Image (cartoon, rainbow, N blue to C red; front, side):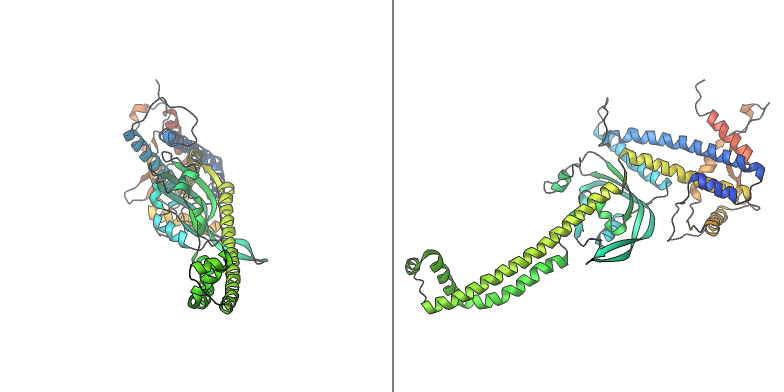
Length: 442
């Protein structure tokens, strides 16, 4: 069973399309085609019910932390209860993401991404200490060609993007007075914020965080400081040797000759005339330098405005869902992925002419996807095998006593560790039995 660093477990086809791809493979007899479709339908209905229960449990635990909730509580939760419920929200969030074939991005990976050059060259900083909880998962690490415009010239650039990014954030309960940006963003420390985005450039992932701080890059600082130093040095060389005379000129211009005499500041008319020309030249140079610095600072401010516009567009156009809506989307993703994996495992075991170990089955499914559909995936064989093993029930027939029939699994292993699945007819009967016994009120 190979492990690939450059592949994901995500299967880029819908459940319905994958069923038809299996049928078009031509290994199922014509008489079994509709039976296979029916089996897949009942499996999908079963998992829809299972994940709906998980969604309801999440909603129950998330209610005290939901910033969008519009219902009232009939119970006041204690601190210990809230801590336990928060832990369950985080645990359920990670679990459903992994079921949907998302993978985690660590803080170290995020920090490395923050250091990479963004499409807009500004310095950004995210303080992870502001967060009590911060979980970031993604799916679909691909490259995309975008068009950029610079100096009236259009050009193409290849960027690395995440097709999906899921983010959970809970801020520290005590926000430092200096962290005004969290207050300005209307973040409530007691709430948990969840967001789902699409097509986020890897180097711009910091746009998704509410505590992003923008500052000048080293280039911006140098463009301000270096010209100022370069202009200040010759000015200082000219002014310092004649500083007393310059003070005299300034006093003369502001207060008149009598005030100079009172302060014992005496300068000849010739000296005043020479210094005045130097002073005028110096002031002209300072005005020019100030204008240049103002222009550079204005350019930085424009970049900052452009960056903030990009943040706004990202949050508006690339946002798929927020808070409870995110979990509902992720449950649907998890249902899709779990069903697709089970369908692939069941189909290949059903149509295989030889017995297959889990490792052989994993490799066969990956090779089948690549050879037939030019799609490279890192199939996660353990998940669907565990799911199929846990689907247990009875196969009833007329005249049999239900109590005397043992429960069996949809998937079992033989003495050699090879996988075996029930036939389509028996598989449908087994799941039908499970459905019939989900609610036993009498």
